[in-house]
Length: 357
Image (cartoon, rainbow, N blue to C red; front, side, top):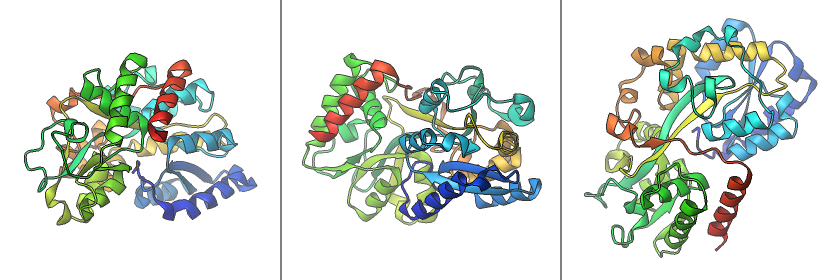
């Protein structure tokens, strides 16, 4: 991903941080990109470097808390572009870690799809520009579950899955959203009234003998291929990436959006408040919004493009489910809520209890 943990990138990430922290970070011919692992097409970087006569220095993070911690530790003046998910955008804005965009420098903003042009997490899109979007859902072995219900019950109901090993996601908000959706309070639930029964459901599920652990999107797909688990939670783009690389193994692995609802996430390009090269950062954002460049990026990472002008250039797989949900499934998608204050404290407390008990 986007949403994967790839330890082979650690050395590169550390190297990028050291570079960003040095005096060379102020060099006018370098752009410092802080991104998820495996979330950028090298050819797109090469094309940008060639067009503007610059070097792109990439550093990587594996989680949003890690990204935020590094920004607070000085990265706010070291990186030019970051790529946070939608529910972290308000936190970054409220904490003053990012700057408003100069839209006059981004003419390709006109290519952004209408549903992403005024998002609830950044009204007026003053700080963020969509990069890629996708969904979370259930991945499962169709040989083991040939008649699997299109429902979170495949994970949460021991009567539906009585004896097959399964996993939940490592991300607490994804799990809580899934449990809330299954219990009828909606994926985007907030507050004690919805969260406490959801946390109890996750805790009960965790204590089932066939629960294998909290496993992130790409690792769970690898576990399903090996038969370690038979169902889990992943992201549609991770699923498509793995399927492209190993189509034979994925003949019996499917991805579903549960009828109770699930997450729609959007990763966004943002400029840190004290970015060393804000003008170059605006050029990079505009470059990614070019129709052919946007399509090339999505074709590489296998996630849906928020760029309407890129649609004619996308691979066929990215114009149909599961990359692009059908209308019925689209209506079931919700953003994970951005949490702050007492709500955030309550959530963290409940999630810590689930993990520790």
